[in-house]
Image (tube, rainbow, N blue to C red; front, side):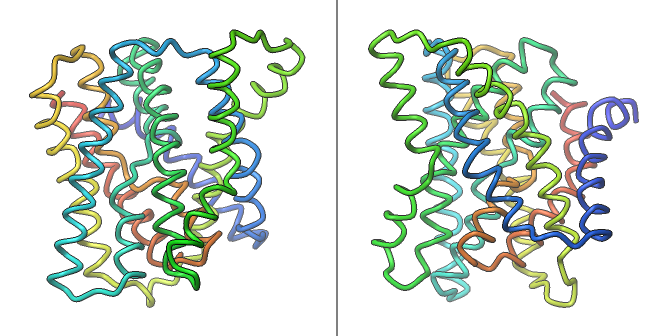
Length: 298
């Protein structure tokens, strides 16, 4: 109970604020989410990579993330074949299962559970996941539209975080010192991303019509996201030479509910947003219990 009150409840409360705000004012969620996606996320990407030291632990994060992503994509491919799903249905399930809420939900949980040292790992993992979602999330959200893969690739290339990563790597490679005035603005916008997206998630969840839910898909996604993902994560880190604290951070982060950013992608590209946001809602509610239990185990 103490784990829930000290770690999980503060995060859930902000989702609830967004939920109540949308019930009250009925705002345009797509416009609000676009601010986070096109302005704040690129700033967070630039800020974190500008300050980051790319050491061996960061390489471990990259390897871990790649293996976990491939494993979950393969699971979804098998389900698509068994259930005879079309491409759009597969894409919506990928959005709901392959990308965890490592930032909006995971970073605060890690901070409360493991302190500042764990939070440093969490922030790096958050940005890495943002990059993965920026490519694969947009790809799966957009690939079902007219134009197929061409449109998906074009959509990826239009996403500002892609260019934020390119610019910050160029800056670091050349050893360019950014003016303090510029970084102050970047820091302010980056700091606003996490609470902004948490509120946006609550707003999107407020728009869900329960009678439209496809329960078997939501149930499947919930099992993959909350149970199979941390199990796979545990297996992966067991075979890696990795810092014990980082291993805990990766396992707990992998048990997070579906990422709020994928809800924004689904809204942006109209890729079954009701299903994706439904998965986000159910996994978020269920995670209150599953994350509390996992934290007591690790």
